[in-house]
Length: 266
Image 1 (cartoon, rainbow, N blue to C red):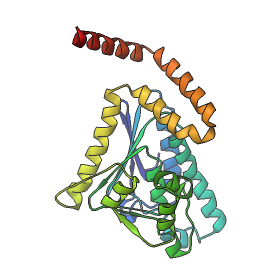
Image 2 (cartoon, rainbow, N blue to C red):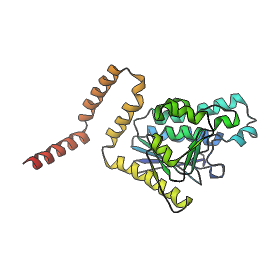
Image 3 (cartoon, one colour):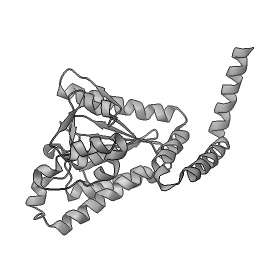
Image 4 (cartoon, helix red, strand yellow):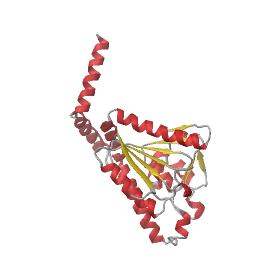
């Protein structure tokens, strides 16, 4: 796997670290293919029950590497489309999986980086973080799932405010809009980045310490709901909870809960 992504699995947690800090972790061909490979491995391994996405350097992800597009790649539309499809494969690996994903997105997240963040199920930023679209500033249109996921996350009107302006949301605005779950602070930019990464890992460890498979199935139910009608979703919920109850983990947890309740009432 390319050094453009650092990949490690430890005690059930897969950590994917975007690793092009000099370019604010913007996607070029190397990062795109490394992203596709890393997400495929993380979501297919039976020992992985939680995924953490973080980034090296001062920012989470600035989207596509515009300089690389204009020089190395010659800004070919066909090449950009093909590269976007490679990154999209990784996004689909995450969103279609039954593994919960947390993004630790310190610093700036912009353009396609917003799509990477939206591919997580829980996002943490720093109090100094800024998030926005900014595609139209250079004459481009949203990609990497931004048009597919942004309106679902914040509503259509707010999504349009981001894609039709050069606005960058503050961390507090991103929390208020529901784009991210929480913001953490640090004494300076570096300390805050460390705090964001640490909080992201804490959330992943919380999933692992609990009913990890149940969290994963809950994520799958919510993520896949648009594929089904209301009645079909009710049926899938009923099937899923029945299947969950058959697992040893659920049986042990239900028995423990019942015993604790009986003790309290007695």
